[in-house]
Image (cartoon, rainbow, N blue to C red):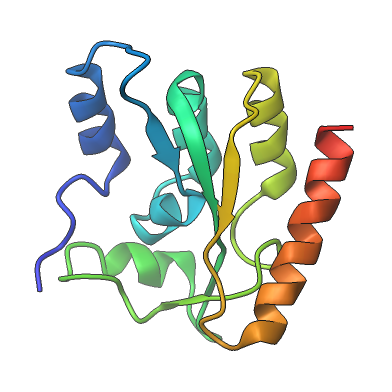
Length: 140
């Protein structure tokens, strides 16, 4: 298994800068990818918000007893680290109020898909309920 070469924010942004803005190319923003890479998802969104065409809402949490320093020390391992697990959207490492504030500030009105169900449909239902609350609050 090989690590995703463009997962780190600096590499992704360098590649994105090579593609001129176009109505035919956009960014699918997944805040958990930044978490997996050890980057700040809100900072990533600040850079890509004008080009976001879809959002993949997910959340990750650190395995109990693990710290962000442990996650950063695991950087460079092949694939996704076992130090982070999928969980209910809105209950993990992502700051969804800040994410939605930035999306609204950039007039984002696109799709929001859910990545969940890894631990059963109850978590999927909880993620959906959370996202419905966020949409109602930020897109009245």
